[in-house]
Length: 421
Ligand SMILES: *Cc1c(COP(=O)(O)O)cnc(C)c1O
Image (cartoon, rainbow, N blue to C red):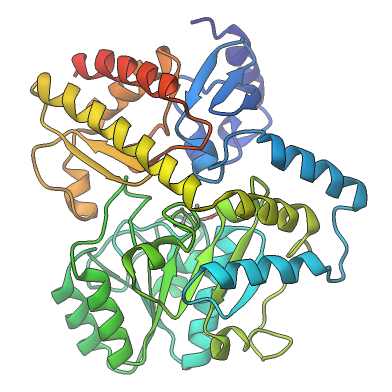
């Protein structure tokens, strides 16, 4: 595979962009490919190489790249203006669409990213409960703002993951292992009437793909209700991916608040906080909890979202689910034939493989998987025209544009990769 042009651009880019990129994970070794264009299930780089894409912008592109309907509708919107600074009716329409689909949603505030959504949801939870402490799960990612940039230190108020985050900003963030009921009970008992919220991804999509154990979400719903703690589902990945109403509909557990991002913008930047009216209404200006944004509810993102959600119906999800099953069945057969130790996790169109014989159910157990093996797997796939996120701790996604032919090609590349392990 010829990568001369990407290499050249990369060598130039490190002089002007930190690490040559605008978000750290994009800088994989020895250098990333630079994209020229994207179409359907594929990315095409500046050297003309094609990759079947399972990263899909880290989740948003469930309808595939440059989806023809999104392109058409976005062109129309472009001519009508891109930022108004005053409200437009489509914001109401998208809010109603979200409320129709999502069990907990009675009211919505649109923002510009998943990071903003979780930041504002946590502020809302703290504001309405008048409590400062929050619980998050070890290894979980909720965006890049200070209060949630804490990975480890089970049961303790966490230490920041990054220089520049003051310890004061994370001292109220309590970390517990995922899928562990006892740890939650302990923390809640030790911090009676002090915890504002528990925030979690119903399926951990930022530690690979770790589904909740049977009964775990029910348990969280009960214990938060008993202790007047606000339950926040961070559905920035699972929202509009698992089903029309997201993970809460899929698992039939209704949280108090939910955060969205990624898919909700139809490929444009967006975020949202939705949930119980009595809470969401407390955002300014109807309430006193401050939250604001220049581009919040901008017509390009709102229109992108409205267009996307219209296309995401039950038939779409059924087809996508079938493709997920097809891919995982193929992977399972190859891995089993080759006698490789693996844990293959997947829910609908989310998939990740861990090279280990041990069960993976939280961050600690995910870390036991063979990370070097994963890197080899990533590199062999790349050489063979298949792009997955370059980390064990990301999740693979499918779009409506992935064909069976794409999946078969991918399985061939995977077989080559697994053989190298
Ligand atoms: C991607 C992600 C975020 C952050 O969203 P951005 O739009 O990148 O700020 C938050 N939570 C989860 C679960 C995510 O996957």
